[in-house]
Length: 313
Image 1: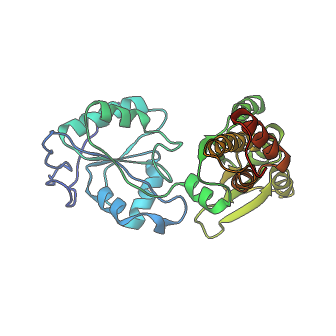
Image 2: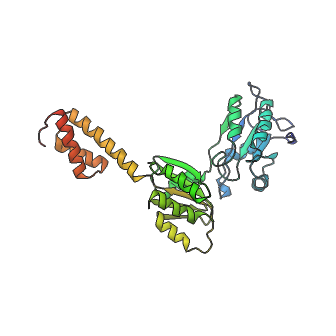
Image 3: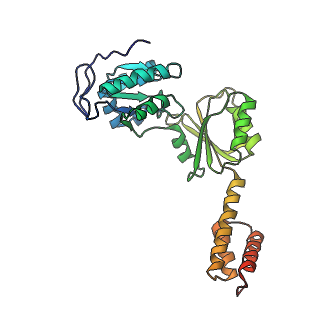
């Protein structure tokens, strides 16, 4: 692969711009690698800082240079674009690292959203970190978190999965490994596979609550909410399913129940140890965990037997 040639002047920013598109190197003698999110649908979602960085850096590495060129035209960004994708990631990472070591600032973008999130870039970032090259990630658009916060699903703990395998057997095997995960699960899926994927989710994980986010941030953005079997049936009736989907699925109810029972046991033991009345313990544990009355009563009874009798039981 030919070396990357620089042939334009950057605009101001950190450091001093040079005519070849580089900037005066910092004290460490290297440029900075910027990880720059781009819009996932609505062009207005790009940040002012992202535009400033993209206008200034010497090189922008892009998954699809044609797609990025159109975006840059709309934003009046004149940048030196080079391709960076799954098929050239290893060799291109070496080239870009060489530029960074020479003092050139480099930005990495994906076609949509945040770089490295289900997109190439890990090799370059890992190499930059290993070489003590500064890496600056910019905040911005990402479909996974955007879908999560609008889904209505629990968001205190979530597990981003991305795309599942395309073949049914491999897809179900991957889901089996996730079956007991207590965290809310987040997936991506293409329109032509979404019905089969939802059917497998229901078959392996059970008929859990879920939300489908379609065409996020676009004018036709849509959220479909319900249980997995219901959502599968709703999409089956569409003659042609359109749109890119982010799928948000509730975590394992069994895992949550295990967590609640463990919390109840610890809470019961603590209250008994501090001499609380059995009646108060039962009320507190049930209010905090929502566990069934009979189960809570039995736990309190066992705990009090181990520690000695309590009054007002």
